Length: 203
Image 1 (cartoon, rainbow, N blue to C red):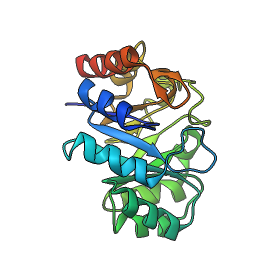
Image 2: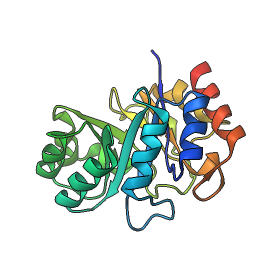
Image 3: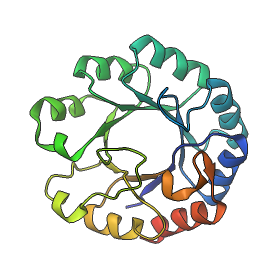
Image 4: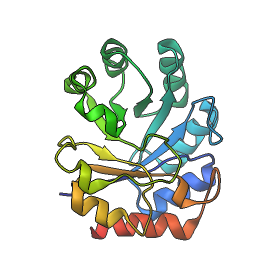
């Protein structure tokens, strides 16, 4: 099984090209107003054009209105949408009519029927993240082994030093990292990005 690798929190064309050159399968562009890594749709679109169609471009949203998500995703020309927050299955289903969706879950969500019900929608893939996304705190993978949904992606405190272990324990379909790949918030560290992609590939 080949694990897909996403580098999130991309804020510039320079960093988009860096991650694509390192072998990332996907780039994440954050549109949530609360994020210090927030980008404009214009920057995301230009970065996407720079890396070409082989690399997926994922727009990241947090509790934003449906119209705003769809308009921004269209303007940024993303190829998928990542949804954080307390959202109804109806909302997720509506977004999934237009874009493949990575639906973000926290560990506490894994036992909730109402949340898991929304994951069975066509075009929706679960992504398990830490309770505080971007905190750099890894999850307790061993404790989650029996609950981790088949085919789900994994985020939360991943970096070059621990991604292989996370993949070994949970066997995710994809891995996603931000804070451990940065020189400072919103600026990638080239060595860390390359090391992360290589470690995920070797795992």
